[in-house]
Image 1 (cartoon, helix red, strand yellow):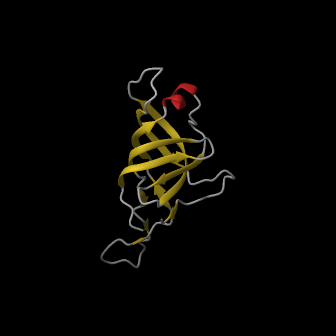
Image 2: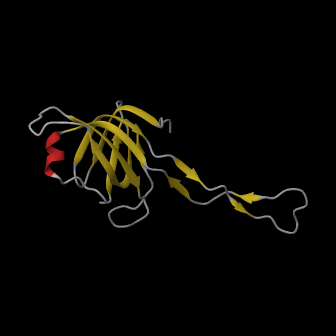
Image 3: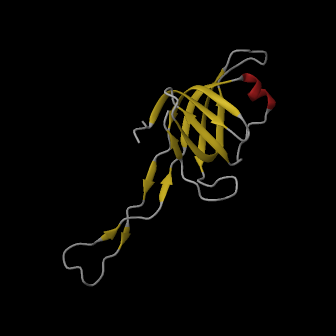
Length: 142
């Protein structure tokens, strides 16, 4: 899968509690594993040995983009609500994470503003779907 970690011009959508950040610059969550499990024992004579880790962890994703000001004014952004977060790339491909909105920092705007408001935010990857079942990020090509 050839997905860049830093993406320009993508769309970020929360699906259950719908809202969309457009023209987003996104730093996708980083997948990482542990340093491995030490399995050194008395048979080792020259070096310590390790086994690969078993679980993968994801860092938080961050974004900067544009949001409809009406969404900000309703005060209904789904903070701390587990949801599907779909990142759609310019070519139509996408990757979907399960996670929650951690923060959203709108830049200055006026209450009667009709043009999109620039926002900066962060989301946490939970890897648990709406039924609390472990769910890995899913990529779909265009």
